[in-house]
Length: 316
Ligand code: RIB
Image (cartoon, rainbow, N blue to C red):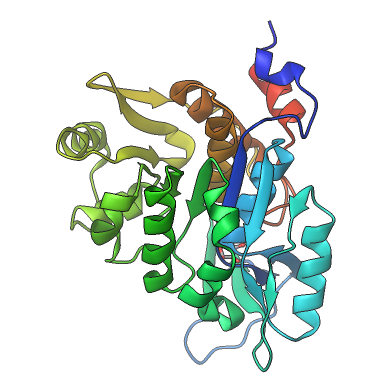
């Protein structure tokens, strides 16, 4: 039986989500292997996609039907114009996106390899998202139900924005990617933290957590922290603690084309569902299904599903 959330039309979710973060032009090179130091190889394909963890998460939330505002900065260049046009074509409020002079739009150089991908980000205008910008867009944060952030913008700005949201009763969701040591310091202002396994290991000061120990480690961390922890574990699913017990939501088996943006899809849908009052476990299930759909196409945003597409999978 279809869930009540799906009986609403797209755009009808009542919750509001603000996503403060990066937008990049993703330059994706598909190649069989990485070149060695000093070596030149011939790759297979190049593609340009709009990406950046902030923009990706905003698009995921909007496609799921959330009333979503994207807050960020672009540069004064062709990529800036392209990413702005692209985001305007989604059901997103991009009115507060600022254009900075004399700087380029963020760029992500992505090597897509058969087994996974490697990404280097050059921040450009994302690095200029500062407290002054947060002051300018403060209303957009305060009027939201959920503020969703990642760590591709300056950490001082993140702290400032999270504090503002917390003081005004907005639910705060931090996706600690790429990982930064500031995370521990930000926890007092974070309601929900969504690391992947590697980021969770970094949070507890380890390089790796052996698979059999993950669930017990999540449980132990949650018992001593007020911030709600949700660990995304790729094909293993997603784990969190509910009423003192560990819950792992399994992932469906899918044919993976490109994992870029899977975590962003998870976070965007989670924020959208929570903003609309969907119970936590159900929101995690929906977000996990959405992430599974997103990896079936090349490009971070290409495979991000609509709410109806998530519903089809859930009801099968
Ligand atoms: O999470 C995927 C994103 O990371 C890519 O779109 C790239 O821009 C980097 O920010």
